[in-house]
Length: 472
Image (cartoon, rainbow, N blue to C red; front, side, top):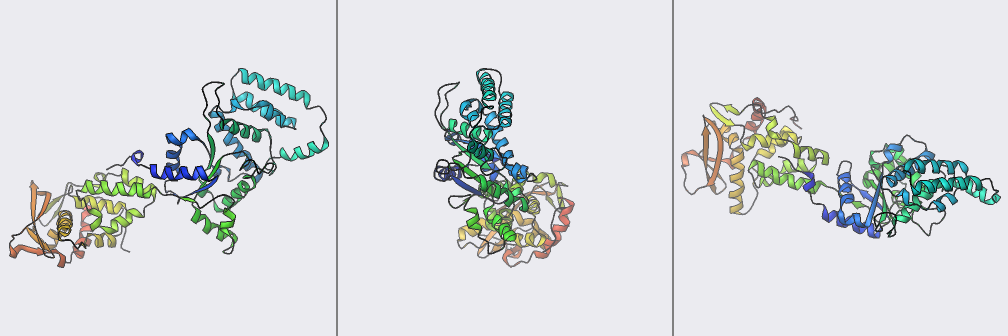
C-alpha cells in the first residue's frame, strides 16, 4: 500500500492562507515540528492562482545560527539577492537610484563587482561600468559633513539604520516587481513579494530568540516607517514555526511572567495561521488500510490502532504509507495443532501494521478483543462479520478446532473456510438463521486474551515481530 503525497488536496487550506496574505502583512504559520509545513509551503508556492499574484522568497535562518548578530542580516540579504538574481530581477533595478544612495567607495566597488559578475555582457553590463566610473569621479567631491555622518550609519553591517547599496538594490528590485512592465523582454505582470522565514523550530533555543531579536530590529524600515512595512518592502513576512512550543521555550528562557504574546506581537498582525497535514494524510491511510485488509469498517472495531496512527508524526505517517506489510512475512503459513493459516490472511497483515505503529503488546491485545458497540442490529451484523473474518484464527486456536457457527449478542453467523493444500487461505462470514447448537461458539462471552498473547509470541515464526513493543 502506498499513498502519493501529490494526490493530497490542500486547496481549502491554501484558500484560507491566501486570505491571510491578502489581509495580513505579518503572519506566523504555526505547526508542530514534522507536521508538514514544508510540504504545505511547496504546494502554496506552486499554486497556479497564487503565483499570478505573489512571488515567494524563502530564507533559512538555521544556516545563520553560528553567525554573529551583525552578520545575520548580511546573510539574509545575500540569500534574498541570490533568489532575485536567479529570477532575473536584478537586471531590472534602477542603477541611478541605487548608486546615488552610496556614500562609501568601498560599497560602490562591492556593489559594482557583484553586478558585473552576476550578469552577462550587454546593455545592463555596460551601464553598470559607466555608472561605476562616473561615481568614482564623483566620490572625490566633498560632501556635507552632516550627510557623511548620517550616511556612515547606513553603511555599517548589522546596524538598525543600515541602508547600503545591497539593501537599496533589493528594495528597488521589489518595487519594480510590484508594477506592470512591457519593456526589456517578456511582459511582466505585477506581483506582491512575500518573504518566508523557514524552519525556525529547527534552531537551538539559545539561537532562536537571538535571531528573532535580530529580525525584530530590522523588520521595520527605520528611515520611512509610514511608507513600507519592513526594511526591504516585502508585502508579507511569514515566520514558519510552532507558536505554542516556542511559547514554552520563551518562558523557560525569560521566566513564566514574561509576556510572550507581547514579544511575538512584533512578528504578527493577527492570530497565527495554524496548520497540520495530518487529517489529509491519516484519513487516506485509514481508507487504504481498510481496503487492503478487506475490512471496510476497520477503525470502528480497532480504536487503539486508529489512536496510534493519529499520534504518529507526519514523517512517520508518510513512512507508513510507503510501507509494504509483505516485506515482514517470513513464512507462507502459520501452523497450530494441525491447523494451518495462510499469512495472506488479513490478521497477520493487521498485526504487522500494529507493530509498525509502535503499539505495545497490551494495546494489541486490547484491540483484538471484540469491541462492537453499535446499537443498530444491521450494523452489529456488519461489524461482527468483518471482525470475525479477520480474527477467526484467534478463536479457532482458542477452541483448538474449526468453528462453523458463532454468535454475538442476538445475531448468529456461519463461517466458510477455503483451503489450498490443507492451508486456510480465505475466510467468509455471513449471518444465518439456522445453525447447529452443539457447535455454536458465543464469542462475546469468550476470553481470548491469553490466546492473543501466546499468538503474538508464536506468530514470530511466520512474520517479523522484531519491532514489537513490550507490555506497558
